[in-house]
Length: 207
Image: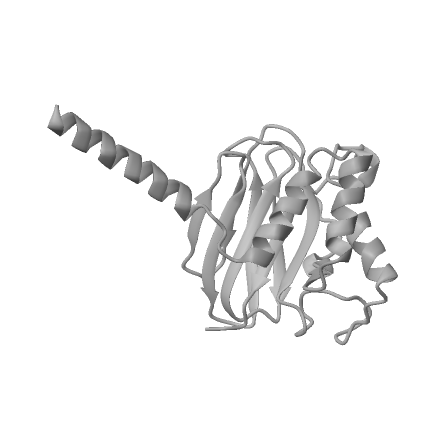
């Protein structure tokens, strides 16, 4: 009986430990992930609440530097259900009159910001590679798929040793230490259908 209790307790502790390992410790990043997940249900109420939360938060910037539409990404004309996040981000950036110090568009390269996010969308079974410049020190990349399905997305970071975990709803969390000033990563859609997703980055700029 005692042996069974010990085994059960050990199993419980391992489950708790596993759940804790998936927790995003950084409060700002966790908050942005929460807002992104809220937009999985893009109702007017959720959209307005997300806008209110993001407008009150001065720590993020749109991740516009992910670049133009790629061949393996979905076009707007394909009318895939999505978060509609980019429209929200750009609207807030204009309202707040944020000014770029690194070019014509405010983005995650700007040294004033440590957090950036943007929505992309991949065709069924396809991959796309993104480059983010002016990244240094400890990095966290989070991928939030529009559908709540584990195994929907995978990530590979070129040239870096990474620690990757995945939540039950398919959210992928990748941490690593940037060895250069630019990071390059490839995202693959494994969901079996066209898939919008949000990319979030915490660029600590701390070794």
